[in-house]
Length: 113
Length: 112
Image (cartoon, rainbow over the protein chains, first blue to last red):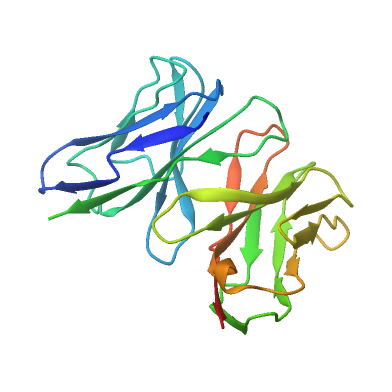
């Protein structure tokens, strides 16, 4: 089945540590996105990538980094510079069609201890 | 810039009641409009979409019509079930399909 796989589903981190969240898609989609969701709130865009080896900052990129070395993969690193990293992180992808929708993974919940 | 306004709820209904969740938007050009649903601890799933004015999206008994004159995309269902309990997000995709804006989500609880 085609889809988006995020891992790990749950992650605990000590303050001062960097962590990397994995996102892999086998939908052959060009564009990929990372969103952050906090309890009771909507989604906020962290980074997005339209093509391999290119990505743009979203609304809340500070303290995060990404890479897009392969079409299928768009990992997100939450660095120690992110002041409040505890959140639910969602990866999404879409086709290049203008009217296309986002397809989401199951999410990764990061908790900083 | 583009924006989406959505009733925040929570909304609590009895089974078989009629559901409306209001969504209005501000956008330039010709955006596409979406409703997503999120169950606890999961990602978002597309519920329905409409890509041009007067289009009606429908799925699983839910419907929404793209109204350009009122800049609205209200979600409706004639008879809700307990299994419809979830958070519903209204979203807008820009002209180029690159940037998406989401509403804050509406939590729906359906009681038996």
